[in-house]
Image (cartoon, rainbow, N blue to C red; front, side, top):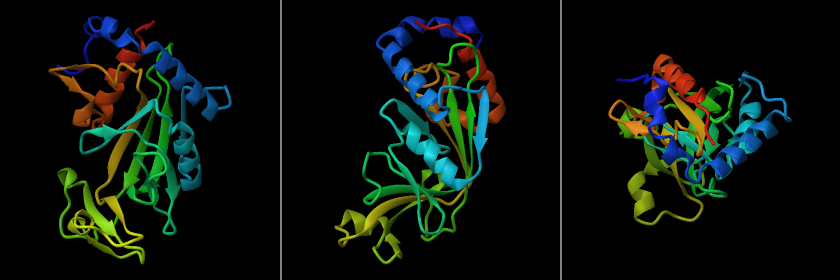
Length: 221
């Protein structure tokens, strides 16, 4: 059953507190830095340049991004390319060798509850025009080799030894929601038969808000 009462989450508190308090503190400092110490309950950005500035500010080792197709990785740097598309890396300094690419629409910040440990950012992206013949990632994205001249070849070109200046890209050809939490959050750690953040739980905005509000009202050490 999705949307557990607080007591269901409390069963896992001992596990969540083990070694996580420092992560929560660091995430709180990262979030505070975005807002110069005056953290609001909500905020949003629609200008692509502003979106990149915020994403770079939170691209620290204590963040984790969940994808619309399921799964997730840390975000470790972002930029706009010459077409105005958003590119982000999952390893620091690797945008020129492996990038995720999408159309940035909106970045929303939400800080529910009284404790701050579930503060999160939701990135909404639009679709790119497909450049390949197949979209994997549950139909959300295509993996291609981008050559130095900006043209695209299949993923196999990369696997077989791509030419100098090429990079591997994951291009989102379907609209999607990405959500970024701190690694010390309950959302990032809690799992049971009715909830797993890695199953793209955040795609359902209503259910997502309900469960995060419940988590946010739990006091952690």
